Every structure is written in C-alpha cells, then in structure tokens.
Length: 35
Image 1 (cartoon, rainbow, N blue to C red):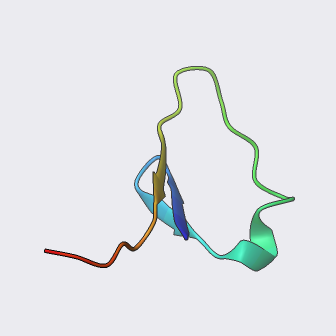
Image 2 (cartoon, helix red, strand yellow; image 1 turned 90 degrees about the vertical axis):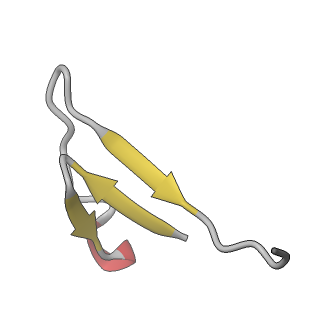
Image 3 (cartoon, rainbow, N blue to C red; image 1 turned 45 degrees about the vertical axis):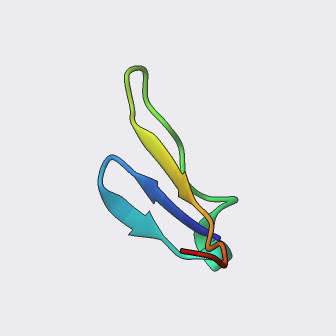
C-alpha cells in the first residue's frame, strides 16, 4: 500500500502525523497481480 497526500508520498511511519486540509487530495494505491 502506498499513500500520497496532495501529491506527496507519505511513508507508513508518518501516517499518524499527517493532517489533511479541506480540499486535500488523498491517493491510496495497492498492488494487484494480473495484467
């Protein structure tokens, strides 16, 4: 799993520290097998 807030990748170790402002963009990506 990878997380980005406002285009900046956030390491798992910082997930508890990051605040999301109104209108902020959160992207959550997961890897999946297949193709």
